[in-house]
Image: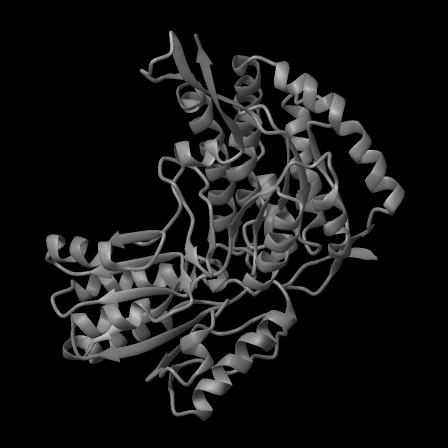
Length: 453
């Protein structure tokens, strides 16, 4: 298999890489045991010093890495720059907090001394997607490395240059050889890694289907797994919401990264009393988005990463239109195979794919409801449970509703986004386990009870 890096905007082939052979995979795995043992013996201060250096490298080379992201998967330069900055931020966060999160915890028992010790789990395989090619890796690798684990990265096949650049960041930062391995392997070889005794855990960010396959394999081999899968996040607009603010944030929540985000708002559940006004405000703002070269500062809507993603999205849109939804904006293909216009579907119903499935692109589904109770029912009427937001001037009302939403993240009057200070993850078909914060670093440690009599 050949991994091909293609610029979505121009269609230009940027680079080609041969996927690793079975022999190359085995050679990499052979290096892990010694590297893992040595890395686990490094002091926490030594480990976080490398994260501190990695953060500095990311900031100093921000524009270079952002340009690579933009070229390889189409992200706007401004969004790519923000992604690199966020990677530095998560490194800094664990530099500051890892010692506290991993400190032994004394617990009073009948023992002379009893406590909980947090020790490295081993080697973590990270199967990462293309949509945030640096951030998705750093948000799990920073805490995993700080905790003393070794990491193998299997990145998406359309971003091999990003995968290699990330490995180079850690090399520049002084990470010992083989502690972080960027493995250019084909998807068919993932089971080989999960099954191998030298790999101790796996984390995947990706589709529900991929998550089920990884969970099954990890379970068969009794290995810890964390899954961050898809989402179809509700964006609930109540009758007393600040519609100007809600519609403005809705643009970013739906169309950032060309809508290719698991935590993007996808189902806009709007109370009838204000539905017409909200939809008009939302459409007016969305039609101002300018598609074009992601390197151009005037561009505000990026291309999608691959033509097949456009085709799948348009098939979902056509299904909705055929079943009675109304195209408020867009909903048509363009001449460029990787562009899809900012689109709004109104009147989305349960019989439509747009209601049940994740729309992974710049298409918003409007679902009109009679009242707050109906909004909650429809918000929870989903196989997904990643993020959700509520928009209302009554903050107490919004918080009460947020607590009833079936999701791993619920925001009131704010856009759902990940933050190193807070745990991130989903429920239902959106996966399990948590990344970031204290919960994230403790996902891949041996939580050991020590009893001394």
